[in-house]
Length: 429
Image (cartoon, rainbow, N blue to C red; front, top):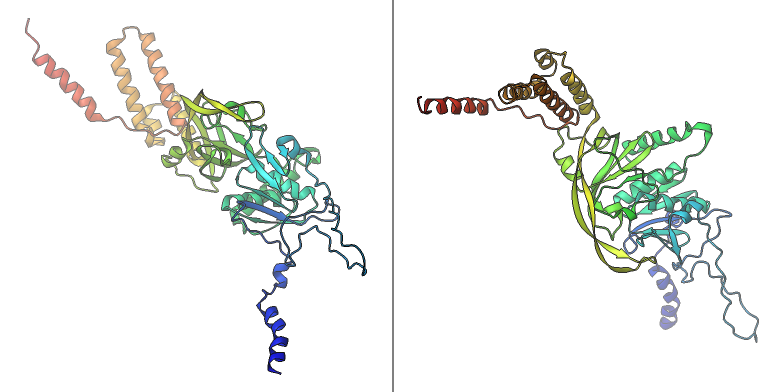
């Protein structure tokens, strides 16, 4: 009896040892970003071109594998014929942007972008274009919701891209600022002329310089900003990252701002210094102005590839490195007013300094320069030309938000004292 009881209890013990599947969790897709990096998972809706995932289900079967029905006795044992997977729909915008090899997608320069697993798309990148393409695939397959996992930046950008096209998102809780960013983007879409739906590929990338050769510029990248051109928008994010968020690229620094025409991403190693030395110290969510204030020529090594993307050697490229300035828009608006006053020769120095005390050092520097050229240049017209050129140079520095260091009066006094000593020790005639 005892042995029979132990035998009857064994199935119950095995059942108790099996993990119970929560009803709440069974409806949500499971995402494990550890081995695959960043993950966007979804369930295709009706007509979305069913999926054949290679993940094992709790029953040990593979998804997409038909369950074998019972055969009548005496039937020959044959292997079930494989079920062909239905072709997965890919948006035309994704096909045009990337090169597909199997279920992997690559940039034209050979860098890996993402991998399509049917109901799950994975990537090790944080590139905004890659993320938007992953979302476009989910939308193409009639998904109504996605689950995101991975780095904080990936989840944030995937949430924004998915919500922008009407998909629900699980796995990320947006901040109030990110909600506001979404509302403004949706409002711009609503107000688009002729009621046309703008492309979701609205993130522009401004290439810096040495981080990547010109042939690697993204197809949708706008022209590189001219020196002195001001880019204005709300600061969304910034920080160090591999160039264009590609793991095979060198480290650089990026800044992402929301402009009237959509998000814009600017890259440049000097941006890190620009933030660190910013006079207004702008933070996330503030209106900022980004400006390339200078360029330095540099030579950088790069990989040389053949037409098929295979590495065939190394080469040096002669490019330039931008010098950046990042300040709050409020700070730059005041600086622009100061520069306009300083340029106006009709405004006296006393009146200008009374309105903008910060201009005292600039006017003192202009005054000292005028006194100096009077002793070295005889022509009055030439002296005025020099002073006007210096005034324009100082006004530009004021407008660009550069530090305004007051002229040290002690240095001027020391120069006058040296002149007096020279006269006292001069030989008498």
